[in-house]
Amino acid sequence: MIRLARREKLLAGGLVIFVASWSLFTVAVKPALARIETLERVIPENQQELEKVRAISEKYILLSGRLDNLHTNIASQKETIELLPFLESLIEECGLTKKLDTMKRDVVQIDSNYSETIVEVRLESLSLGELVDFLYKIESSQVRARTKSIYIKRNMANKNLLDSVVEIHNTKLSQNEFAGM
Image 1 (spheres, one colour):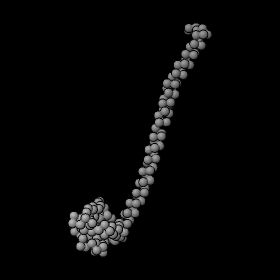
Image 2 (tube, one colour; image 1 turned 90 degrees about the vertical axis):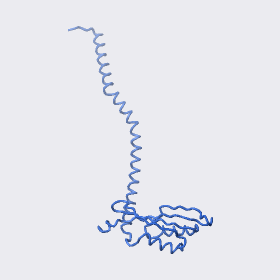
Image 3 (tube, one colour; image 1 turned 180 degrees about the vertical axis):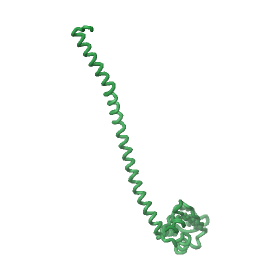
């Protein structure tokens, strides 16, 4: 065996401690510091994403509740009310019979449970007040009819009057759903 002097032993011991410390730093401390730095950067980003998810979740719960209410309202809607006869009586009530140009009815199947009736009403030579009164009566009626779109332009013969196309929608349970109830 080799005999080492005291100074050589101290130097060898110091070298072993240095190598062990450097190895410990390289294997354990340096990756831990890098991981902490990454977490300090990622955690705030994830917290922001979590807040977004919470907001979206609250919005989803609100919309889901509204959708459930809509389903309940549609299911409880009187089946006998048809949109076209209702609008005809409303036009007569508002005194717009002579101003009615055309009415077109279309039924669109939304999904297997619901269909939507669309009625396009073309009115000519009416005043703004008459149009507003007609639209107000549609929106305030007990029938679940809503104005989807309105196209208004000035009447070519009389610039003080309007020509308009009003699209009115009504959603209801499909006929096959009525049979199951």
